[in-house]
Image (cartoon, rainbow, N blue to C red; front, side, top):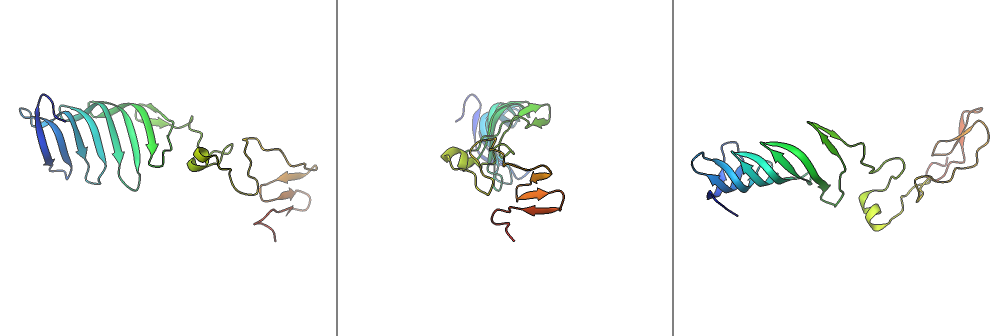
Length: 170
């Protein structure tokens, strides 16, 4: 694991974190490749320069998050994200704009496709009275003044909901 600098055995740092990897003896900081473990158990595994995350690295967030971020770091800040995913394999689509994350391109569990990750991977159908395999299920035939509200048909003249599918039946 160690390269041009001396290889540091596991170091317990004053802040409660731990480090194992390349160490600059002259400057007394992380420099090269190593693993930095935060007090909560989360880790950064990758390259360091002058004691900061620098170059390609992977952040493993500890429980309860169980989330992985792979990307390029520049003097301690994340510069670009190559991949983000949860422990179950769900990949997150987002772009980084300065310190802001843009999730507008991520189409997970949206109105058009309510399936969870396992349902997507294994081809399971969504469940429920209005479940459909396509993003645009066929419309129910409705009379004027009637509206499909998911749990039945709302009749605007009487203010009642009729044709309630299970489990909504009265």
